Length: 152
View (cartoon, rainbow, N blue to C red):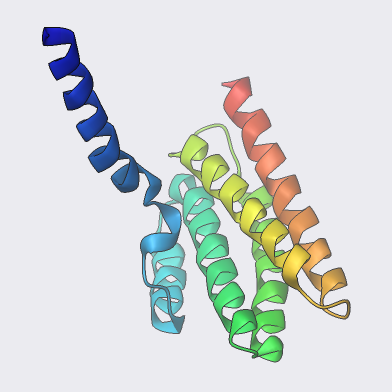
């Protein structure tokens, strides 16, 4: 009898906890103002914090680009993807041995690459080269971050 009670409790916990765990990177409302605020924060941040902040900025810009592309505003989405490419290069330049939250940056970049892959599959033929190029640069930054994490 006790095992049935424990199973019921575990099932109830699983049903209530899993949706909370599934909520994650994409729940935060992202707009141009939050992107601008994050860019200002990066300028004032210590060099060891910049890698994660750049990864966060890349993620936010990708999410906003996805939203704009879904809304039919391909020009704004393409502009954001071009900015993401430049930021992916800055992530590479900001990596060092004493980075703070490097593992978090790597995880965020992996999720961003996943979202870009989704965008690649749903985009039109004319938009796919830009999305693919952006995805390649984000993948490269994610790989470099992962190698730096394993080096520590």
